[in-house]
Structure formats: structure tokens, C-alpha cells
Amino acid sequence: MGIPIGILTPDGLQEAPYSADSLAAAVPFEPEGVYTITRTFNRDHVLMLDEHLDRLEESARLENIPLRLDRAALRAALRTLIERGGYPESRFRITVPRARPDHLYLSVEPFTPLPAELIQQGVRVATVPLARRNPAAKTTDWMSQRKAAALPEGVYEGVLVSPDGLLLEGLSSNFYAVMGGVLRTAGEGVLSGIARRALLALAPNYLPVRLEPIHKAELGAVEEAFLTSASRGVVPIVAIDGQVIADGRPGAQTMRLREAYEEWAQAHLTPL
Image (cartoon, rainbow, N blue to C red):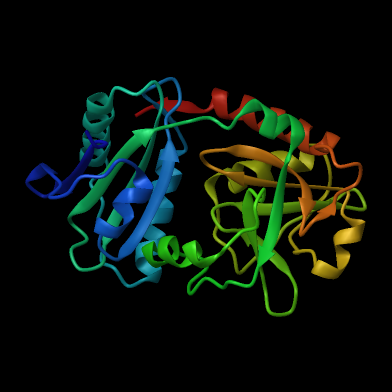
């Protein structure tokens, strides 16, 4: 039995003409367009869903897709599919087809939290020389393109590096580094992640923020690093391209920001 998948049309929620066992397995069946993806909390609550939908509309605008969302109908359709799945927590994707933007593809899978040891021990990342066609838009072609990034064994995430050596963003996340006590992250040429928006609002309470990416040549000076995404929150990084960061453990500022983000998220949940 596959995951719940439906197509929200002007006539209501319809069954999809295909089945899949996961969001990843559903990708080949979905038409080209733009998308957003996030998770539930407490089974039927969400974090910043309207911001996700705002970005979905902006991605459509940047891709010249004439999208007009009926947010009430979309929320109702998502509730139906989430109830159908019956998962303790869900992860869901909303895809807007370029050819038929009034037919939204909705898919829901069980959400699996990050193992506690990944947070306690941190993750390893590697730079990859990929470039997104339209960094400001969340396009479906990127889901297929990023599969071309063959990551070494033990590497959790790839970080896009520009032709001139700047570390921009993760394959499915935003990237940050602390250098000289300052939080550094790319200010342009990257997707405006939803978790990133919350993180950048919280971060100045803990350390200065500079919207400028670090360079590969500066890796030896990195004091801490982490990534963010809507499904994972803040994830500490302990090595980049095999180079261990500081003492090889999640940094104190990173863990403070993770705790602050988690507290903020719980305080800002809303019913789906």
C-alpha cells in the first residue's frame, strides 16, 4: 500500500493515477513545475505554512506560472490526506505543475525525526560543484538534478559551491558557518528557506550575523557550522570536505540556536 497522494483540482480532491511508497518515489510521476515541502507537528499542526505558500506563489511567479492558490481548499485537502495516512507525524509536498497550475499534486509520507545521535555527534558534509538554474525558486527540476551529486560514504549533505569557491547552500537545506564569532551565510543566490527566515530572526540575539558566504579557502578558520531546513530544524556540522571543524563536536552557539529555534517553533505552531 502506497502513501496518500491526491490531485487538488477546481472540482475537488481527486485520486492520483499512480502510487508510490515515499515522496522520493513519487517525484518521477509529478509534472514539471514548482513545489514546497514541510512537516506536521503534534499530528495536525504546522509551522509557517502560509510562508511556505507565499514562497510557492513567488516561485511560480519567478517561473512564469500563473498560480492562484485557494488556501482554504488546499488546507482541507492536506487534512484529508494526512488523516488518511494516519501517521503520528507527516511530511508533505505540494507541487504546482507548469502546464496545469490549477491541479496541485499533494503527497504525504510518515515523518521520521533525525536520530538523536546525529544532533549529539553532528554530521559531515561535502561541497559539490552544482548550480541551481533559478536559486530563488523552488523548482521540481532541482529534485532530479541534485540526485546527480554522488556524496561520499558517511556524508550527510552536499553543499553547493560556486565556481569561485563560495559555499552557498545545501542540496536540500541552507548552510551557515561561524567565523570570528560572526554567523556567516549567503545573502543572495540561494533559496530563502523557511527555517532560515526564523533562524536569521533569532540569531542576532546570540551573535552578530553577516549575510556573506564563506570561501573554501576559509574552512580552516571555521569555528562552527550547521544547516537548517523546515523538516529538520538546525543540524550541527562537524566536518566539511573531510576537514574537522574545531574540536569535531557540535558548537556551543549552534546548539544554543538549535534550542532557541525549537522553542520558537513550538510557540508558533498553528492548526492545519
